[in-house]
Length: 159
Image (tube, rainbow, N blue to C red; front, side, top):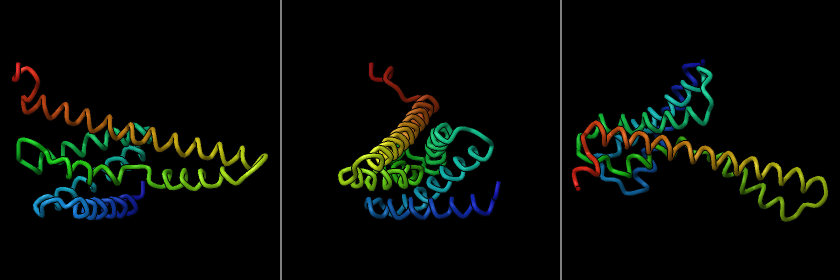
C-alpha cells in the first residue's frame, strides 16, 4: 500500500467534497465536516481495497464510515444530508459514468464487430456505475440505521 498515494487521493476527495458542499450551498459550518467526510470515506475505501476487500464492499464500508465520521463531528440530532451527499460523491464511479456516456455516443455510429465491442464496454461501464451507486446507498443506509440505534431514534417512539 502506497500511503502517500492514498493520502493524496483522500485529500483531493476531501477538497472535492468541500467544493460540492459549497456548490450545494451548505452553510459554512458544514464545509469542514464535508471535507472530513470525503477524506475519511476515500481513505477508508482505499485502505480496505489495499487489504484485499472487494472494491464494492470497500465502498459500502466506506460509506458507512462516512456516516460515523459525520455523527462524531456534528453533534446535532440529525446529520445534514448536504454533508453526507458531499462526502459520498467522491466515492462514486465518475470515470465509469463518463465512459458509459462516451460508449453510448459511440454505439449509435458503429456497425459490425466494433458495435459489439462498444456495446460490451457500455454494459460494463453502466454495470460498474450501478454497483458502486448501490454500494454507496447500502453503506449510507447501514450507517444511518446504526446512528438511529445508537441515538435511540426509531419508529417505536412515534407509536
